[in-house]
Length: 279
Image (cartoon, rainbow, N blue to C red; front, side):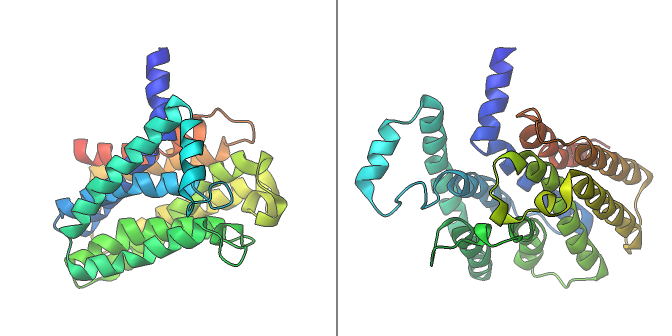
């Protein structure tokens, strides 16, 4: 039992779990919009997400002087085995994602500069500010990055003519990511400084749950505006995802299990893809 918990814990800590979630949402875009799958892009997204998320979580300039080698080496030597494992995994995945990046079309490589710059400005302090520390902006930057990577990127890479369903998918994904990020914001109420002005800080836990419920209801009903008719199986899957997402918001609390948001909530896109592939 402890071994399973350790594996789950490390998958969350090392950002492997969130990488699978991002990969899953990208696959869902391919399925929903009938776009030919680009394996190189999918591998890039999976392996690139791991070092990107670990960079955001662990390498803010306020914590690490990233341009000075000696303090980095000292910090590494003092790190735990778990942390060292995460760092080595990040480096390994960065190398693989770099190889996959070289196999992408040039215009796709240029497009990727947008989420890359957002990640850098979200994390690294310029003029004593990051995008993360700008009041009330954090959750929208996160949602924007997920939309760019999981919806816009595969469509742009394919060069398909976009139709009405694409715009609905775009809006749905933005609403969905904001909604399932709210349990994280509720969890972080105990640690976030007030200047961040997160949604729970501004409207309270109850207000946040109400907002999340409204966003998810919009997400659900938008599905029926698409030109592509859902099969009976897809309606069942979509309803399950909606209910689980809604419950994840309604059951969220400040003092939650360490696996609640990072594993169970983050796992909803993975379950979503799994159900679509099974049915």
